[in-house]
Length: 325
Ligand code: GFB
Image (cartoon, rainbow, N blue to C red):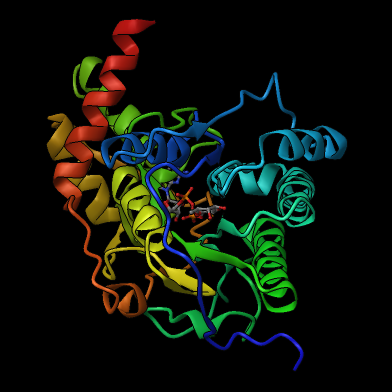
């Protein structure tokens, strides 16, 4: 049967503590959280590579690395990522770099016989117009959100590649769809970052400038689901530790807030008391992006961080970067 967005559950041996796990993108927002969580759960046989020593854009180098290291499992947290501004500015990079990296690493893993692969998708792969919360089988049932369609198409291609390799070659390659992720090691560049780190930086700098007004993008009415990076990592490891995993699994809290409510929450955590203004020349993107997490919750996983405690932890991590500069 040709590929469909139907749920397929695949069984395989359970991850063992001594397994060698390659975490691609170990310095990034999600990758660094995965390393933290794996170590805290007793997985010590971890393999990481800086971009300078392993360029995922170089197919031969990736194949040679995989052949020599032969990890038991791979988590691909490496990707070209960014917020709504970055996606609109660099569409070719978001589809081109991500397609090449995911094919090099995933096809290379298959060719050297690696059985376990967790590919990171995103809630933005779903259609712009779709039921909320979004179930996994909404995939490919409608047009993508234009502000991040190239990225979404690259991630959908990776998801279908993972599922097809599993189906044809009997491997356990699965894709998880995190929502908007934030936490330590985030990107705070105001042109390329996601909304939450951008607001943390904006409110912090405005507070120091005497509670100057803060300008947010869009109308403030879109709704987003936010999950702290350590919860995303915990969910990914939870899924890898199961003896069976569905081919695609949404990760999240299953609820969302408006960008306006988010701005007010960040303002409260940072302690800013000025005005909030809205630049409606900037795009809103998805009207709403809330994952239906019943598939994951039905397996027994739950997040640990609520939004306000997560923002507090992220704000502390941001302030620590200012001290170290
Ligand atoms: O997080 P964000 O950049 O990306 O924007 P998406 C979320 C919402 O926050 C949009 C608003 O409605 C923005 O207009 N927003 C308000 C801001 N102020 C700001 C600001 O100062 N900076 C930013 N960046 N946004 C991304 C995809 O979509 O979701 C990525 O483009 C990825 O590829 C990510 O999938 C998870 O949530 O709209």
